[in-house]
Length: 394
Image (tube, rainbow, N blue to C red; front, side, top):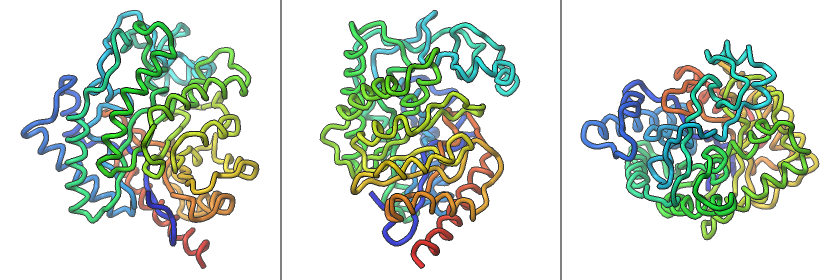
């Protein structure tokens, strides 16, 4: 895995705003179907354009924008057996405490009808139909991973990249988003998911890609608990999912793994986010070399202070968010540099990679900011990284 040996390098979290032609492909594609013919040609061109723009905007470690995926977690519908839509099932995204506190605000922001019952947090007015585990969970997604990797490797070669990353979902996030109606215990369910995802993780790293584990539910589950447990109890809850992830990562070199955790991509007050200090020690137990954390949004921008008391283990890397997906306002390069330096001074300049808080499009039709703003934020991140480099290596 690349690190900032002589300058601050940059990367991102993965999910980029899809161009309209890719949105149309994903909207009309039946589950489980590979892209073929003209569809694959469209996808290859869109991927290549995105990689070219990453090169132009100064991204050192790129990806394919997750263009082939329907969403950062929902993509597993194509790759895992055992799930089907079940009416009346309650999805893992319960109406969280933040949404309960600001029902009217969320209704206005998201265009949903407030629902104080157990609806879905990502749209409280939707029907209670959830993808539910109704059979054995096994991995059947090899052909999808191979197609994604082949397309990305071709673009990497064209644009001069020798390293790229490939995101995949954490077992705990899958478990907490999809109810279990098949396994006798939740522990059995979580283990089955971990064993299945191990196969995807291994395909990614065997192909030479950096594996990024996406795990927002590692922290956002706290918001769904009402009343919330004491932080030390929640840390035990998180530990179970970290153990399952480490089981899924067995045999995979840590230097090929980075872990991304965020407090959810939705735009809202986030007043019920758990503080990073309560889960940092659990997070650092994950068998990854790099940890990507939200650090630019107003709720978590101060949390670099955590590393005044917590030592980053030897050889590990932090990728703090220095630009935010939560605002259309483009950060000033000097602010980006300041955020980088706040971390560099605490954990060492060679142990910091600059990145965004989260992806800019968690679902195929999602836009957290306009595409043009997304790319400008990447340009500014590069400018800020260059400013920080001059100050840190002067």
